[in-house]
Length: 467
View 1 (cartoon, helix red, strand yellow):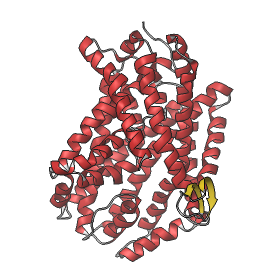
View 2 (cartoon, one colour):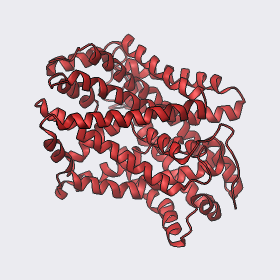
View 3 (cartoon, helix red, strand yellow):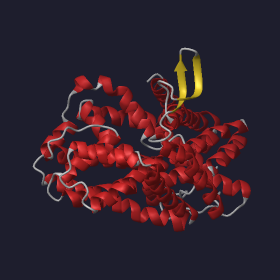
């Protein structure tokens, strides 16, 4: 049964725009610091092979499920799941999963904006030459000076949220599509510039070996890491891919498109490692993971190699573009839903939600300075406390929101979307959207969505909760 519905919000001009949008959503800060470091830590090429298997079994099937739900429903994730549940004779309460995803996306955006704002500060610092010849102590002090200053953090958080809201408010075609057509090619170009520069450092092969040495003995320790990153890296579980799928042309192949996005996301992460680790080794430093790599180790490296000031500027512009393309995807599902629900203009809805994210984000701003003693989820001798000031243990506001979203809400969303596409939607609807003519290939895709991916998400869920 053909589906001729059209989204009221607009449509992508082609499948390649969807690929740019979905890749922009998937490529974020984790691609730049987390995946390359995990690759080097857990066996290099052996880990990459394991990761690609996990992507195929967990990440891509859920992305496939989200995309087909979105294109079938042609509405915001909440209303798409509600209407498709009704069409299939399922419970309308399945839409609660989309509500959970939408809330998770807004909460993630609230702290993502703060962290992404750090890169704006470092663009200025690199441009002014503040990191030229800097020592480890100096780089640590510079980063500490930024996070200890709530006014500086608030400024960059505000500017980043304004940039995100500006793109979303202009609409699907004039805002999202037009910006992504500029942002994503620029991101790839900047990454290639850094890669070419890394060849000149004299340490490219050292960086290559760190990433791709094949050591199967280390893979076992990285299986859960590979599975978790395969789920989190593709931006599934929050409805971003679903709402992007609702703007996807009917004639486009969902399977080929999703596979392309997965490969591009992995390629960007590996290229980032090849571009950055030779620079780190050239400066005589050891590679590390986490924000410390981006905001402490790399500034030292850029400050102590030839043309480092220019390359550092290129790098932090790259980081900002990656964060920006991800942030707009987090805001879009909620904007689409409230436009449909209230009938208000896109500008008004975007403004309201951006302000909400900004206010919640101020909790993250204060987590690094005057609000650092505010602790949540505290397990003490006298029992569990949701909040305690100055308690030992527990999590600050930023850590609490991160824990709630990444370890609880995202896995719940991903699991629910896969189960909905696999078990609630009719086989005819799924077959119509996937357009897979081979019965064998269709049954394999459905089996991955129905069984394999949900099991993988449950494993990730349990592993994340027990960390």
